[in-house]
Length: 255
Image (cartoon, rainbow, N blue to C red):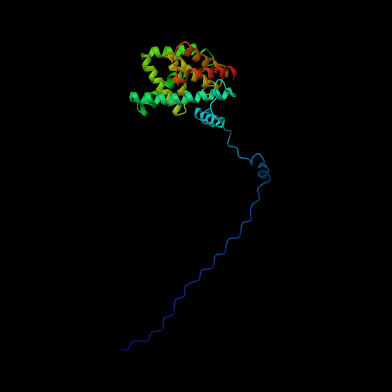
């Protein structure tokens, strides 16, 4: 049989979904009057707290001193000393530079690695800092007598103690660690190297690791100068001993 004719296909119409209406805008909510009132002038300034006073820095002092010395055309002398305080700073910074180079040379000579220096000098600082809590409270002799007891009890020879003191002094100055430098200086002065007490005097004057105390500073510097006058080997710059002694003596009297 011949095929029946087929009706033409009717396209299938896709249903149309109703359009979703856009959300109506939400009007801003006004802040309650109480909340607005709480925002005061005081609240508009943030409060991060106060800065603590920075610790006195040996490195910063010597940088500033070098600038002043250069602007003055050179260092003060015993004859030309317009500013006794600056003269003391100049002598301290000279001594600091010398002591740093000296201690680094000693460390190299004994083969001390940086790791060993960091460890042993840290131990010395921890062990002896309490003995130097307030060197202004007593005469230098009394403070150094306590340090000497620790040295004697340790069983170390004075020679070995002096090596340790010189190495740790350089490390304290290199790292701007006043507490380490103070312990090293006291150790050296107690181990029959009294002229190192001069630098402790400078530290007391400037507040390096201590509360600044000018009167105690003068006592420690005089103690060191008396030792040199009595024949002790100078701690620093031995070829400038006479000049430095004159400068320091005049400066601590005038300052």
